[in-house]
Image 1 (cartoon, rainbow, N blue to C red):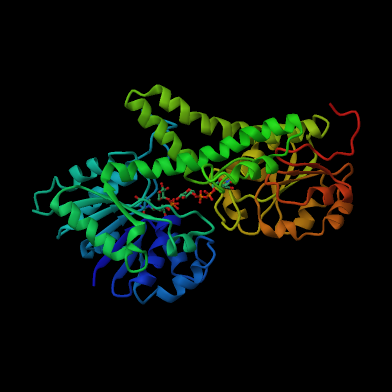
Image 2: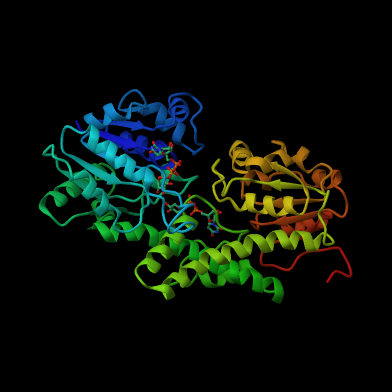
Length: 459
Ligand code: UDX
Ligand code: UDX
């Protein structure tokens, strides 16, 4: 039996470890966190994150070979392998503020590991980190005079929220980076063994440490870049009567371009894309590559433009004012099937409309609690309503901001009847049947397609 510890019971730690444990019944997994309420939630029937299929896996493994705890020090001492998945937010202060990763939790965790260790261990970076962080970690960990040796590995997580369990069970690939020393390679092999319980060997890629760290940033930058690319074209489509869905379909059949991540939208959100690109930008600047930095920075700038453009289009279309108008935002989560609202474009649109003094109602099946806390003091000016029919009653407009499938099943005739006329729908996810909505009576504004509007004399 190997004692495996994961520090950080967030989205990443909390969803990966139970899945790994379900395939490795002979190993013992402990997941620790400094946040007591979070650990209590993991021990209860109401898990702190909503992730399809996770409840069942936690129920099957918890108490058998998966344990949640706040006793970090004791479990460090017992562990053979330690995964670290504490958060690495963008720095808000000092050098690199707004771009570089804030590594204070990572470093604190490394020191805590060192303090509490009485045996040599493998430490695995699961959090996304700037390239060469492992080097700093190795230095801290191996600066001990206890005669202990630590091998630091990089094993970035590629799961996407909403499909985390499936992504873990059937990963496109697992990436493990390690030192090219004898003990580094032995450590890599130990981790490979663990994943090989269910992942075919040819899908387990091993690289040097730096390639592994960098690959995670690059994967997210490439994915985000595709969305910014298609979103940039959506703006052009709206001017030219081309249809972004038709353009996306026309290009996706080219295997060199590929099928995925070509859905135009109000923008990308989530805890990773923006943070990781800014991190990449900072690295490039740090290494004296300003042109490369600028190139990637534009992916984030285009996303901010798309969010702002969407909100501005709402205001313009509604006769240049939304002040005092009730507007129902359908969706707060940054994507469907998660309760996560970090960097959600829905909340950006909400903030922009609040600045225009609109009367905002947010509805979302799972993410309202997080939306409320992310909006901070602005939340006082927002109504939260779980029922989309009540949310849209007496509203001038609906904005679809998360692609929840349940929004395709609503009775839009009933909704239209209860709204102020002329009634508007702004579909930030191109989710709904626009022709049908138009026939019901709505003025419909999709992304990257001409609007279907009954209004005349509009510029
Ligand atoms: C985090 C990082 O944000 C991401 O960059 C990385 O790729 C994976 O880890 P996530 O799991 O989504 O992603 O973050 P979050 O849900 O914030 O969870 C981090 C957890 O670490 C929190 O529960 C926090 O309480 C805990 N933590 C943080 C510790 O246990 N100790 C610390 O010192 C700091
Ligand atoms: C992403 C990566 O996909 C994952 O590999 C990495 O480990 C973490 O970051 P995640 O942020 O959970 O995962 O979700 P993802 O499905 O990538 O979506 C990110 C954002 O892009 C969402 O707001 C989504 O709505 C948006 N998106 C995605 C689009 O707007 N259009 C698309 O075509 C795809």
